[in-house]
Length: 163
Image (cartoon, rainbow, N blue to C red; front, side, top):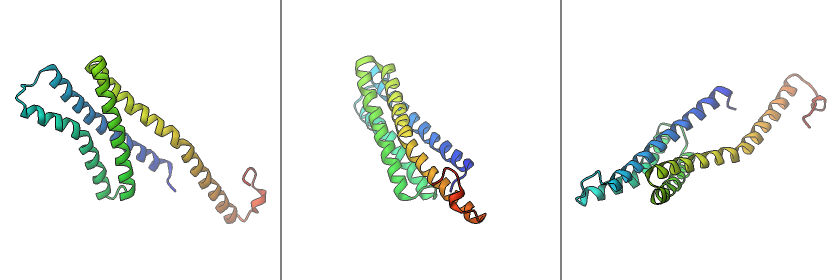
């Protein structure tokens, strides 16, 4: 069972992942904006490279960071794969929304739409998992109460509120 400090460390590490994802999306959007604004010399090859790098960069960063966590033993392979898939889906949705908003409202609208979609998806996942976390913590508390009852030799019927 995890204590409070280990849970805090776990959630702080998750927020670092979000920062890395936001930076890579920002770089991808910046590449698109500079190309659309004509700030780069258009000789064909450079544009092709930047388009490919801008599209692939966020997904490559996610794959590398999640694989490093598996290699370093911070996550098992199944969890790393699931986290990478979720982060990639979230990034893909953000890039799609950002591209659509850029086409309609310009570069500033595109960046804000991409960041907004990521924030919305993070918030949705957090709220949807709250019920699951509460359920598991309640089960752990019940198990601890039973262990304490056995340890202090109290009959289980004398505990209030835990049937």
